[in-house]
Image (cartoon, rainbow, N blue to C red; front, side):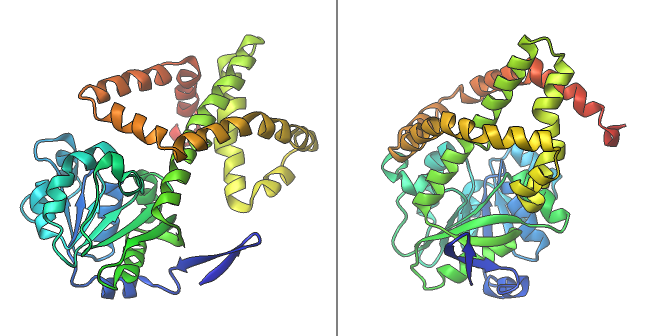
Length: 347
C-alpha cells in the first residue's frame, strides 16, 4: 500500500495486507537455508521456524556458533549442516555471514546457485560493492534483501514478545517472476512489523551511515563528551552516568519511541523544554558537517574498503576485543555496570 511519511508517499507492506498465512503459502515448497549463525542468523532462523517455515541452518562444524545452534534446538544432520551442504539443500539461500565471511564463502555459494533459486541478503554491502567483494550472482536466480532495522537479538526478542521490528526490502534481480512474493513472504516470516521499499545501494549507504552515526558511533561520542565534561567539573561517576546515559535510555527514549520527540518534550519540565529547544540547533549545526563527511566516505566506498581490509585480517577478532575492552573498562561504562545492577528489576 501507499503511505505518507510526512509529505512523501512510499510503498509499504503490512501484515494486514500480507498475512503470515499468505507468506506460508508462497514459501510452502521452499527450503530456506540460513547461512551463518552469528548476528542476524539466530533471530531470523528461529523466527522463521516458529512461524512454520521449512528452515535449515548452515554453519562451520566445531565453531562456537555451531554449538550455539545446537543449543538453540537445531539438529545436526536434520536441520543443521555444514555450510556447503546447506547451500546444496536450500532453494532460498539466506547469506547472513559477515561481509568478510561472505567474500570468503562466495565461490561455494555461487556453485550451488542453480536456476530458480533465490539469494537473500540482509545488507546491501556484498552486491553494492561487488567490485571489491567479487559477489556477482548468476542471472538466473532471484537476488533479494530483507534488512531488519535492528540487531538479530532485538528481532528475536520482539518476536517472542509478540511485537515486530520494521524492515526494509529490495529486489536486485527478479529471474523467476516470483521475487516480490518471495521477499515479502520472507520479510513477514522473519518477524517484520512492516516492510518499506528500498534498493541495495540505498540500504547499504543509509545503514553504514546510521551505524557510524546516531545508532552507534555518534551516540558513543556524544555520551563520552558529556560524561567527561561533567566529571571534569566535579560531578561523581554515578551522577554523570545517570544524567548522560541512564535517563536517556530508560526514561526519555521510550517516550520518543511511543509518540515522537515533541511528545517527549511535552512530558518534561518547562526548564528542560526551554533548554532543549534552545540547544538542539547548535548541536545539529556542529555535527552536520561530520555527518556529511561520513556520508561521502560511505558513498565513495572508502568505508567499505576499510571494513573489508580490517575484517579480513586473521587477527581481526583479537584487535576487535581489544577495542571493545577499552570501551567496556572505561570509567563511564564501569559506572554503567553498577547503575544497571541497581535497577529495581535486577534486585
